[in-house]
Length: 200
Image (cartoon, rainbow, N blue to C red; front, side, top):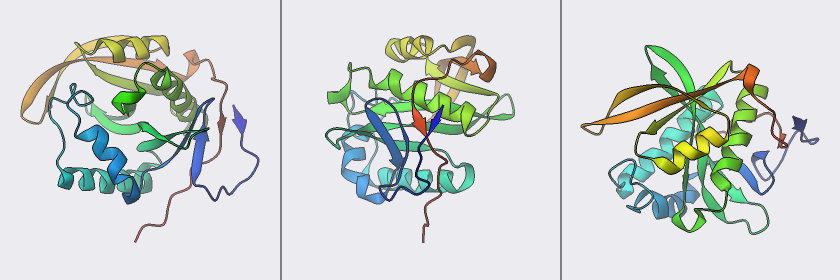
């Protein structure tokens, strides 16, 4: 793991991989988030799209996660163009009455099949083990979500069990994947400590 040399980055970026930079989501990202969260193709695993009010709530939730955990969904920005590729992050969740962190991602449909998901998950996993010093990271994936299963397995995650997740009034069958710090091969990325934004 290589640290970024400057301690304060005025651009707000906290982590970068080969093609992507990651920063906190802000209310200014509403239009980019709406493109994903209201797209049935992107939201197929969730089995519903978001309303404008739900998107605003989503942004506020991420801001609260940054304050609580120094983690959450981050905006993934393409380095050369500055385009908002999607959102990827580390999200606190409960499993078997234990609080753990899962890797998660969502990309604009136009950015599918470019390898961004795998690149981002590798970078975030490295961040989780290096900067957050987590012993393990998890992924919850619907059993019919073949692309995300392929990404998790390519990133070195191992299938642990099958469980039913209750979400939005539905029972959804999921695989639980995990990766331990001991088994992790560090990706070639640059990171620096995450700074909590001032939110009024």
